[in-house]
Structure formats: C-alpha cells, structure tokens
Length: 383
Ligand SMILES: *Cc1c(COP(=O)(O)O)cnc(C)c1O
Image (tube, rainbow, N blue to C red):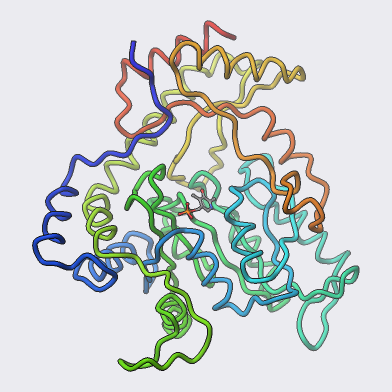
C-alpha cells in the first residue's frame, strides 16, 4: 500500500504553463510580469492594500521587523508555540524574542498573559516600553496565526496600541483565513507576512510576501529587499538585502493563487472530516482549535492526545507510521530550543502541554476520501 503523506503540493493548474512562459520570455529573475501579478493577487486575497513578494517567509519577517524599527538589543514578544523561523527573524535583527505562552482555545498568543507580563515587567520611558529586568526596549509584538487560524488581534492590538508598540503578524500559513468576515491581511497588524514554502497550502516552491495598508511602510520593506538601491545607478543608502522573489517562483504562485479558494476549501473539508470521525473519542483525543468567529485556513489537521501518559502519544505516532501513514509531532516550543534557552519567557503550561500531545495527520489538499478513511480507521484502531 502507498504511504499517505502529510502534505503534498498540488501543481495541477497553470504552474507548468506559466513556468514555460518565464523560460521562453527569458524573465526568470526578480523582475518580471509574474512578480507584479503575484503581488496584486496576494494583496487582493489577503485584504491588504499592498503586497511585497519576497524569497521566503523568514526573509519577509526579517525585513518587516526591520521596517518597524526593530534593531540590536531590542526585545520582540513572540508566542513560544510557533515554528522557529518566527524567533529566528527576531534574532536576525540582533534582537531577542520574549516568549509568551499561547491560549488553549486557539494555540495563539494569549492576550491576557501578554497584558499581564507587560504590566508587571515593563515601564514606559521616553524611548518606549522598557523591560525592567534587562533594560531592553520592547520594540514589537509578533502575533502568529498558528496553522492559519487568526490570532485574537482585537485583544492583542488593545494591549499594544496604548503602549505605542507596533504589531506584526506571522501569517505564514494563513492566506485564505478570515475573522468575522475580514480577511487575514486586514485584521489591524502593521504588517503581516505569508510563507509560500513547499509545505504550505499555497506554494511557490519557496517564497513569501509582506502585506499591509501603509504604503510608506511597504515602500521601505520593498527598498530593504532590493539591496536598498536608490535609482538605477549603484547608490545604496543602507545595508539592504537580496530578498526579492523571482519571476519563476511568482509564476508558480500565480497558478496556485488562481485556485486558492479550492485548495483552502479542501483543507477545511479534511479538517471537518477528521473532527467528525473522532467526535465520539472525546475522552481520548481533542480536535485542533476552531474558535467561534474565525474561519481558519486549516493548514494542518490532526488531534491532541489527552492521556497523562506521554507514551501513548509516541505509540500513536509510531503505530501510524508503521501503517504507512505520515503522522508527526508538532513544533517544539521556542523556549526549549537551544538558541533561545536564555530568552526571557512567561510560564509555558499551554505550549508545553500541546507540544507533547499533538499528532498531525495527513492533510494534503489532494488527499482522497479513501486515504483519509484509512487514516481514520488506523487512528481508531490504535486508540
Ligand atoms: C512556514 C512558517 C514560517 C517560515 O516560512 P519560510 O517561507 O519557510 O521561511 C514562519 N512561521 C510560521 C508560523 C510558519 O509556519
């Protein structure tokens, strides 16, 4: 029997045709018609005014943080339960992540813990919000829309705005998501960043985009991604980056975005089917979060094992792997990662509980009902 993989790109649209167009027209680099088209498509799909295409989500986060003024010696609030790239982007700026726990209902940055730790551990000074223990400035708050589910932006902005701290959203896998009818790039963050890595719902092979509504800020992002070049000569006004997306990547991205709704609908269908199939097992496993008001992009699906015995989690993952089913662990929280062990942090009960208990299950947009039934049967048998 064939292995059922966790995530597989669906390249059955115009991908090959658009790539051939790049080759025949010689537009393969970072200038080309597909890059412009991709940027307008991302802006429209995300509900933001402007989009800047970049070479990866990590690069997008890096320049977005720089554009918001994050620099050496600063702190940036980051939820601990995220992919390590969120924290790495902060470190690339010479700053340090301040790790805050997530909430159990959404797996996203907990606004109550955030407000509490800022109230207790910071004070407002002339240069901004300062962390008392280290004297470092809190230069930004990064919300992460984990697995494509929007973070509680209203509450996070409610904490950040009065303190004058900018908010960036790591929306890596969230294109297609919305909250109370508003698209994910229009939820109030100063800048939001998407990833189009190979394992995301929409892929360019690799790639990313920074979106927002402040044209000047997005102009700065664009400037930073293009070696901070002024005009057509070789004048550069600061240390910039070569972070632009190529026309080849954008060609694939355009073909993918033409099918955004269908691909995200497939992801949601897979999620709902798992949740319904496991509904009667609620004493043993819990579904991925689905808070009211939000329409997540359902990047990954799976379950959370409730048993206090962590062996049970390993047994489930191993049993599924043996049955030819790709079942995996979830992000290890950032505060447990070697490079960030000394980073300031809140208590992390939720992140730690989730990390040790999540089992991700196959959820490629092209997963057939037969294959999903095989996964469901195997999970039920193993439990
Ligand atoms: C995928 C992902 C990234 C990184 O994006 P790349 O394009 O791989 O650099 C960052 N943050 C989160 C939450 C992600 O899921």
